[in-house]
Amino acid sequence: MAKKRQERFEMLRESSKARIEKAALELFAHNGYGHTSISKIAAAAGISKGLMYNYYDSKEALLQAILQKGLDFGDSLLEGLPEDPKALLVFVVEASFQEVINNLEFWKLLTSLTFQEDVLKTFAPQFEQKKKEFIQLGTFTFQQLGHPDPEMQAMLFGAAMDGVFLHYILSPNDYPLEEVKCLLIENFCKKYK
Figure 1 (cartoon, rainbow, N blue to C red):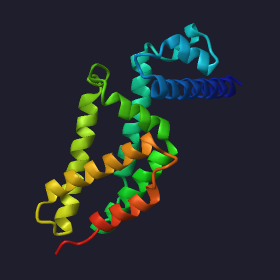
Figure 2: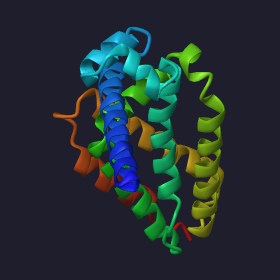
Figure 3: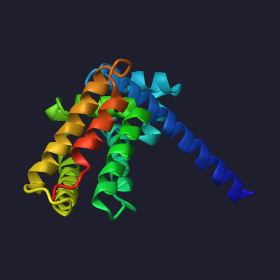
């Protein structure tokens, strides 16, 4: 009986955390991190402010939990990658585009945070590490494809992806995402030898 009670408690706890994170994500993305209070997050999640602190010590801890999910996506993207360099790039493009479509609010938040140095400085080392890993993967991949300057091509590829996502985030209903994705694949995912 105690085991079932514990399992139910954990399910309720995870459900509450998910509601809190969803409410915070939407508020942070729309109003900005600095303009979103714990009280507003609690109200949007349908819980008391006091109960909020049972789950997260601070607004920063809540933001950390949300951002960690984005970092986890990056880690999952690096698992089980195709060995063929062209297939790998196509996979990265397809998976990244799908992630932005599926989690637009998260990417709006991340984009807005890049312009809030005081907020992002806490998380900068983690993001820098992920960026470095993706540049290394891109450099290796473009090297395998025979590009004469694989590191610069990897940086250009990353900048192109970032630019596409920024345009999509700013205008999701009007941006020709599928067509741009096809052009990205056509222009980057080819052999250079």
